[in-house]
Length: 530
Image (tube, rainbow, N blue to C red; front, top):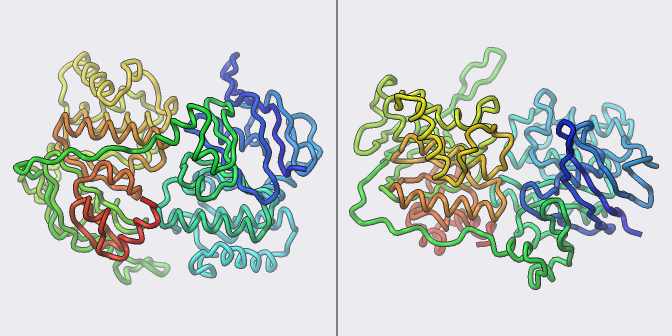
């Protein structure tokens, strides 16, 4: 008997009087101890399927319309369930949600959050729960586990938060662990550690793993079987080796073929210099005690220098905490820093605040999370036009609308986009909106902070092609921050590798990504499986 059996499952979302089907008549099984990967692009219904297993889709906006779900031989709904949901959720079925920062309570410590599920399901005393939490943090190899008991989520890195989520999910030794994109936006080395941890826990605890992901590299490494979803339907199910060597469905074949391709267009030898950074250093004060006195400094970035020419891309790579984003913010003068930056030959760091605002059009940024950086209260048209309004560039409303439509069309979006809101778009489309907002000001250089990290492979490839086309058309200089070395290889002319705020390697992309000299760069390349 299978551990989990899903038959004819359908899910719809309600909007007013109408209902939109999200998942249509899918069926699959999960066997004891196996890893089944549920694969597909954003919007294919993967996460909705997982949430419906635990009935976490909240009426009246979403409900399961048909289907039979059996877990360990018992019905779990829709309809009359023979197992209480409180027994399933966090007990016999654990779940790792996609974004740990929003899944963890920012007001509670790590110890309190993990202890809550132990006390709910096992009725442990406070002391026994504390001992078990400590044991779980050691099980998931969280560094300095004892000290982290009193930490809050914002005090942890992305990889550390993910380990806390895993500890919560396996606290009651579930029979089935559902992992929804557990490595999205993690660095390649941290990703490898999390995957090894999940597989080790699966074997040690004897549980099955339902792995939801769009990363086919993760699937190849972790899964024994694969189920491919498209548009809410299951299009193919096969053993992992069979699916990768002999995919049957055209959509599966397209997924396997979709990855960033091509090489950056060579930069002319006489291309003018756009950005030059010399000796950039950033230090943050370390404060302790009741009165929060400064007791030292943390050097986030130390003595970084480089230059980027017209039409050139500098790939900035390294793990979380290496200083990549901090360096980008320092270049933009969004945080205080030491050192000198010139932009188009002018002393960018010498500009007074009033002068700086007038020159910001030339130096733009696309942030890592487009959903977080786009105001949910503004239409796309107003979001893209915000820079025009701030800098008073256009004289009439008609000219404003024309410029906005032109920018949206240039990034591959239609004119009708202007009256819609960010939540109505996919991740890839939101990233295009963020890019249009930057490009409408006709910058010389754009800092791209992990612009493809949370995107599907096919959408990644589209965004990379778009960035390359825009660079050729406009002669843009890019500072491309990423942990995905496949994307870096497709775009970057030069690569700068940061570790703990220091440059460990800097040179032409072909040399750094093919014959790295530094052991740290070699480790990054091995983890990314280039």
